[in-house]
Structure formats: structure tokens, C-alpha cells
Length: 266
Length: 249
Ligand SMILES: Nc1ncnc2c1ncn2[C@@H]1O[C@H](COP(=O)(O)OP(=O)(O)OP(=O)(O)O)[C@@H](O)[C@H]1O
Ligand SMILES: [Mg+2]
Image (cartoon, rainbow over all chains, first blue to last red; front, top):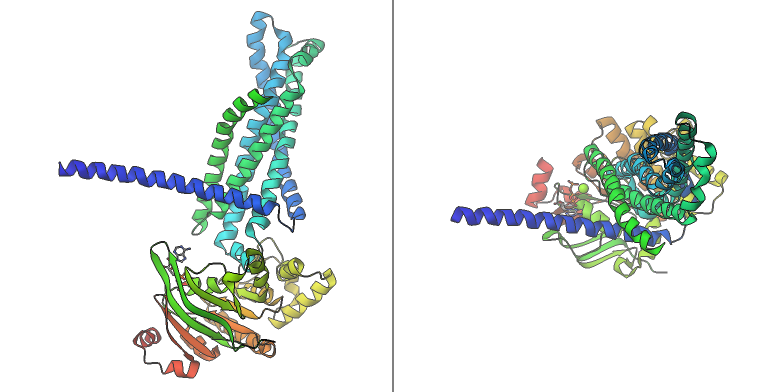
């Protein structure tokens, strides 16, 4: 009996501790996000740093985004064709693929890529600065490390994501068109014929909103992980890992809720 | 004009981290224009005390006055501005590793003055000279400098805005004996050079021999209490049991 109560007590304590852990983590995260928001609107605006990050993110990911886009568009077309040709619905191929690219594949795949490449880089850069006291050095000089390090990265990613997502859509569509007309021998006119009927400006808009939200999330998570680093080099490694995992998971989770929300309002 | 012989005053400073009381009623004044070293065992609360001087941490209770100002009365904004009166040399120099020597030293100038590039260059060369570095190093990255050189660059950066108070957190921990001597000499030279403008130096250290060589005042912190604070010659003769134990280590 004594043993049982002890066992349950230990289990409940463990559960309680992990709940406190999660709640505490969420609290610290929202606090961080709020602080960054505050510093975003404070002078001096770090425009130069923002542009630097903008180029850094664009440069680091544009090629891999284009590559992923081309092959996603191509394979998507192939698979859809296999199904649609059975019911002689070849004319729907173009719009279906374009819709998928604009609303889902573009923002989500770009988000996953950016989380892997840039979210990780942010956590590593800021984490290294944290453990080598460079973050403290900024604060000691009276410069807000949030404003100097986090805000430019958050803004740059938020604005870069919709651009990359648009590139994804364009390159993916070209890939799809090439496979559709050259490999699967669909008529070029037929490929485009239904596009105006099924695809609206609001679909593209929905994709852009998603990409923007993902960009913001990835950057806030990445920079937060960087600032939370404790200890030495292995702390940086851990934070980098967490930035990627949480960045990707959040893209997928938020995608679902954002979709259901946008369907309602658009 | 207000004159005050103390640069920094702590009264009844208490700091708790959760349940853990790290500073336990510190009453302590640091003389203006002098070198004061704070000694103490690891975990005594020395770095925590230093962070209170900078306003990076806020007291649980008690008052910290720096240059006559009660830090708790300053807004977040004025506190940040106030920090321009400080220079700090970190244990591993904390240079920005994506910036060259020039960019590191000029960083506070770029941030807080309206100087032209040429004016900054002139000031940076002056500072390089003061810390004994050659102009060759101007466009090198921190990764291309030795530990001792990095310390010099860090000190030059700390001095860029002519601080009224310069802080050193364990400036020589982890350095070889020759570099240690060099850094200590540099601290002394810097203090001598800053004497006419009443620059105050505060050092946190474990190195007793160096402390006795360069300090004007020595204080001993133990478990969040300042147990001894004397001019260096008197401190050497202190009979406080903890201080004796520390000196005999
Ligand atoms: N932010 C913090 N949160 C919780 N505890 C802290 C924090 N900062 C310091 N402490 C605790 O306060 C105590 C004193 O730390 P501090 O860094 O001031 O010691 P120190 O005298 O500088 O030691 P050392 O010589 O090792 O640097 C330690 O027990 C430390 O764990
Ligand atoms: Mg310390």
C-alpha cells in the first residue's frame, strides 16, 4: 500500500513537473515574442541589418526552393495525371496542380525548407553569441539584443517567405507544364483552359498569408532558441536542433488551423 | 556641480533568485577614480553584484547608486543610455566575431556618436595605440587574433566612449602567466591614463598577487555579504578568518 501511494505520488509529481515545464516554456516564449514586437517599433530601426538578413535568407534558400518546387510540380502532375486520365479529366490537371502549389505545397514546403536552413542558422548564430557573451556585450553597451539580433531576422523572414513561396509556385508550375505537355502529351491549350475557372486571386492570396505567418513563426522560434541557449557548444547544438524541429512542426500544425480559418474568411 | 567621492554605492542590497538568496544585504561603497578589486570564492555573488552596477539585474530590495543616480529611478530607456558611461571587459573579450578589429572598436562610436568614418578611424587608431596593438590588426577578424590580442581589442572597445567606470569580470582567468601579466599591466596603465578624468575601475578577480599589485582598495564578498573592504595595504593584514583562508589558498 505504502509502495503504491509512493508510486502514484511520484507519477503525479512527474506529470505536474512536465506540465509546469510546458507552461513555463510557453510563457517564456510568448514573453519573448512580445518583447520582439515591442522592440520592432522602437527607434533606431535596424534597416541595414534587416536587409542583410533578407539577402542572407534569400541567398541561402532560393536555389533549394526552386529545385524542390520544380520536382514537386513535376511529380504532382504525374500522379494527378494517372488518376485523372482514367476518368478523362485531363483538362483539370493544370488548375489542380496550380491550386495545390499556391495554397499548400508552396507555403508549406518553403516553410519546411526555411525552418531547416534559416531557423537553424538563427539559433546557431545567436546561441553562439550568447555563450561567448556577445549578447551581454550588446546589453552592457545599452543596445537591446532583441532589437539588434532578433527583430531584423524576424522581419526579414516574414517578408522573404511570401516571395520564396511565390517563386515556388512559379517554378513548380513550369515544372508541371513541362511534364504535362512534353512527357504526358497533354495539349498546351487544354492545360490552361480551365485555369481561370478554378483558380482565383484569393487562392494565391491565401498562400501568401500562410507563407507570411510561417515566416514569422519560424524566425521567432529560431531566435528564441538562440537566446535560450545555456552552457557551451552542446547547448548551441541542442538549440539548433530544437529550432528546426519546432519550426517544422509548427508549420504543419499552424497550416491546418490557418487553412480552416482562411476558408471561412476568404 | 555635485561632487561625490564614491562612484558606486550599495545599501542593503538583497537579491533573490527564487528561493535562493545570492546577495544578502550588501553595504559597500566604491571610491571614485580608484581601482577596487572584489575577491571571493566561486558562487559568492560577484558577477551578480557586477550586473547590479550595470542595471542588468534589479535588486530584490535595497538601493544601488551609480555616479549619484539611484538606478531604480531610471526608466528602461534612460538606463540603457546611462550604460554608455560604462566600459566592460569580458572574460573572453566577447568580441563580435563577424566584425573586424576596427568594426569592433568603432562599434560604440557608430552606435552612439555622429562621427564620420574618418573621425572613427582616428579614434580607433588612438585606442589601438593605447592598448598596444599594431595597425596591422585593424582589418582582422577575432578568429585571426590571439587570446591576448583579443583582450586588448576588447579593452579598446570598452574605452571607446571614454567611460567613467570600467568593469572587469575575471580579466585574467584562463590566460597563461605571460598574458596574465600583460593584461594586469594593461589594467593598471588604463587606470593611470584615466586618472585625470576620475575613471573608476572595478575588477572581479581570483588572482591575489595581481590584486595586491594593482588595486587601491580590496573587498571580500562571501555568501552575498561584503565581509571586508579596506585599502590594499590594510587588506593584506586583515585578520578575517575567511580572508586569511582565501589568501592562503
Ligand atoms: N540568473 C540567475 N538565476 C538563478 N541563479 C543565479 C543566477 N545568476 C546567478 N545565480 C546564482 O547565484 C550564485 C552566485 O553567482 P555569481 O555568478 O554571482 O557568482 P560568482 O561569485 O561570480 O562566482 P564565479 O567566481 O564562479 O564567477 C550562484 O549560486 C548562481 O547559481
Ligand atoms: Mg562570476
